[in-house]
Length: 366
Image (cartoon, rainbow, N blue to C red; front, side, top):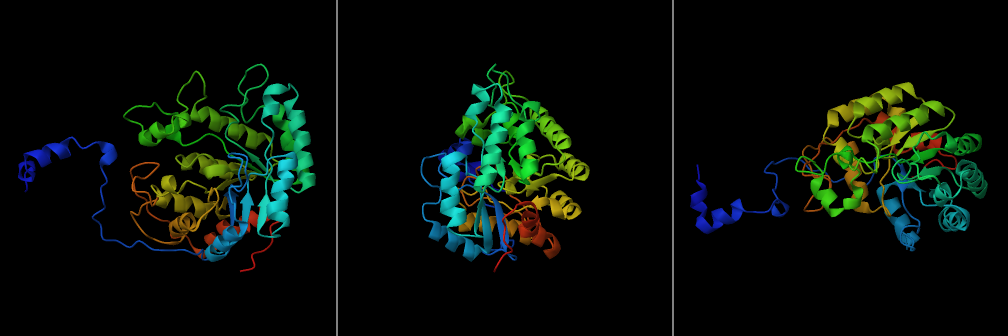
């Protein structure tokens, strides 16, 4: 065996002091790593961001280039979650849905400023949602600030199951529009920020993603409980839980909820890194509930490389592959294994479930 001293005194000492952020181990495994640039079945991307509310500029500045990416990847339709409300909603509808029928559908968001400014915010938001439906919105996107940041005029945190929001959910039920709701974030974001946190490097890069301060934020389980209470109480509303319904690290709970609440669905957007650590459990769950999962990218906007990574994850049996092309994996220092889903499951996840839940989706033409 080679001793550390054989590296030379300087080399050995340098490596012993190598910072973790500079360590880039390459797997010594010789294994298959497939390239899947095109989905096996025409797909609907139910979770993408094409609007301009975050930066003031359109996330997809060249719609023609985006359509070319979609065609090459076998994406029939993209759901734009950035519709917002009022004039901004109409601008999104004109740019995407009306200019390219069948290729895009747009979800509204609610005016979150109303929550902190008006005691009757639920009634106002419900009216706003009905106006959005009349304008052509095909659903409502609820951002994760519900339960984390939104506070009423008295300064109290508004949780997902707050009954003052019932007017919003009733509006969605009455208009037949689904709610794609982002609740919470990865479990580690709620854990102590110390040497035991598996997402420490990511949280140091994005300190505003840490929700472990119990004086400001609820626990992960409190948010999950509140979301479940909402789904249980509003049985007439179709809820699509963003990012595996916030439960990518707790598939046992997700399994129980899918078995209990027929109005709950889950998109897969931006959770390949988590699900790929438990590929057998993920495959088993999706095979038990094939009608309850939807394909999504969380692209801003989607690109070919991101699509290919998800296609490989869903369609191949590759093992121990990187979940990201970045030299430093952005979410944690691990590799994933893929699911090798059957065509029966894939056709539902890629498009059939979305077409059943979201009004205005045309049958894929590819």
